[in-house]
Length: 131
Image (cartoon, rainbow, N blue to C red; front, side):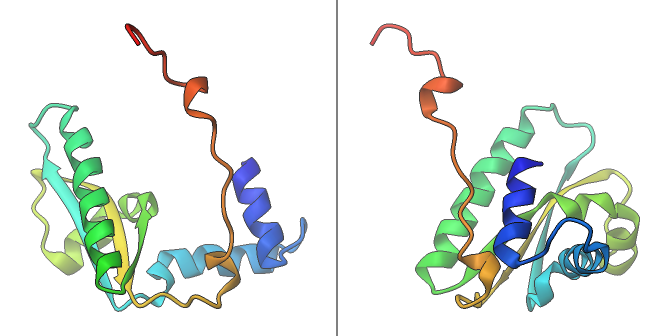
C-alpha cells in the first residue's frame, strides 16, 4: 500500500480523488493500451514451484524486450479476470492463467514511468550462510 500511495503521489492523484483512482485502475485493466499482451499460463496439474520458472521466463522476456527498445509491464491483474481471457484467447480450463505482461513502446514522458519504488536491502530478506 505504501508503494501504491507513492505512485499515486507521483501521478498527482490525491487521497479522496476516487474518480482519478478508478480511471487509473481502468487503465490497468486495459493494460495501459499496450498493443500486445502476453498471457502466461501453466497446466493446473503442475507443481507450485513451476511459478518460479514463470518468474525467470518473465525476467528473460522483459530483458529481451528492453534490448529491442520495447517496454513491459508485468501485471498480476491479468489473472484477476481469467474467464474473460479464456473467452477471448480460447485458453482451456486445464490451464491456470498466472500473469499478464503488457508489451510495447513505452511512453517515457508518462509520470508513472518516472516513478521508482523503493527497494528493501537484500540483507533484510536474505540470510547468507558460509560466506
